Amino acid sequence: MMVLGVLVDAGEYLIANWPRFTELLTEHLQLVLVSELVAIGIALPLGVAATWNDRASSVITTLGNVAQTIPTLAVIALVFPILGLGFRPALVGLAVYALLPILTNTVAGLESVDDGTVEAARGMGMTRWEVLKNVRFPQAVPVIFAGIRTSVVLNVGTAYLAFFIGGGGLGVWVIGGIKLFSTAQLLAGAIPGALLAVALDAGLALVERRVGATETPDGVAAAG
Image (cartoon, rainbow, N blue to C red; front, side, top):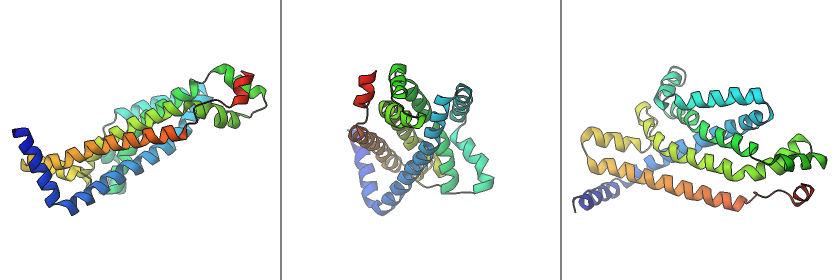
């Protein structure tokens, strides 16, 4: 009953501060989505480069692992003198943190394509780019999307740290609730974040199913 009472208090707090909640939720969502788009825009080309060149693969994988070990707040601290407080430094920190799962899965997905299928495509006269577009990427889509989904879920939680440099988001309520010993305020910020992570993951799963480009073109399959 005590747990139920706390949840009721959190719901009442949320309803009483609904305009502020929508503002913080919008900020949180912007942080997550924009940083993910930046991470995807960096990770996909790096993943392709790593697939085409063994030396580049070693360097890129190492850099990705290093980026993942650096705490988000440390990245934010490093860019703070250049970008100052607010949305932009938080965005950089989140993008760096989101990079590795996408990069790792992009490399794994592209390299998992059967060599015989790739050789068959080349035997049909496809260029390297055509093989990448028509063979490797379609078959790697499930693995790449798995990395993106993992990255998004992690980023929803990491975005709470944006509070510390004025980046906004639901962390304003969560950290504020901790400081004020207000469980209602804390949960009013934490529970929507958890639901947001679930919703984004489900949405990406739907997008993945709709893309549906997971089969090799018939001509290539036949040639293989």
